[in-house]
Length: 240
Image 1 (cartoon, rainbow, N blue to C red):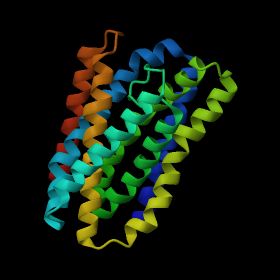
Image 2: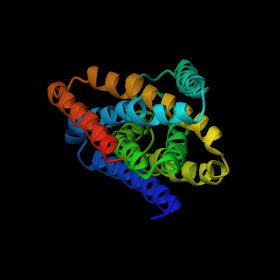
Image 3: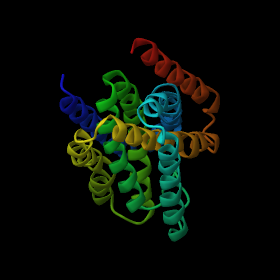
Image 4: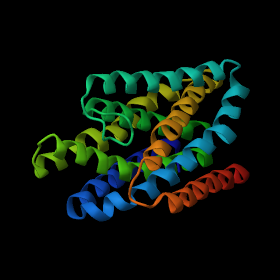
């Protein structure tokens, strides 16, 4: 399987899972809200372990400034989310990205991550993609909920949530792919460092706090899901 095909498959899978989250939320709101914490914690486990044990060491090996790039990726996501949150009166989004523009940026960056990780290693690409795809379910739920709470009709909420949170991921992957393909090993190390910072921010600042603030009573089992996510990242690390 070529790198491009892998990126395309997983970015489309993310879009599909996101859409499933929107659909399930529209049909069974109570069940979806009760169980989204499992998806969030599993994704957090994968996305915080994979960059620390695989991505960042690889990035530092290719470029001595990978740590600065990682910090830049972390600060970029922090600044984007703080800016959008400051401009929005809403606070219910579990990811802290409290406007549709923020969700679109977040999903677009997810797509770019697929392109970077698969260029580095197929196994790392798969590990990162599993975490990203898992969190797409909850992101679809959150985006749809945000639109409904904003007074949008169910039909329009479904369509807009798909366009903003689902479709932007494969678009981001396709836009980033030709650019990433032109990078040499040193520049790819910088890109991978930045991706590591983004993934760590996503898991530590969005996914886990979302579960900690969850009031559905699923916290204990959610941490089991987190542990499974970390274990999966280690499995891929030893398989490389």
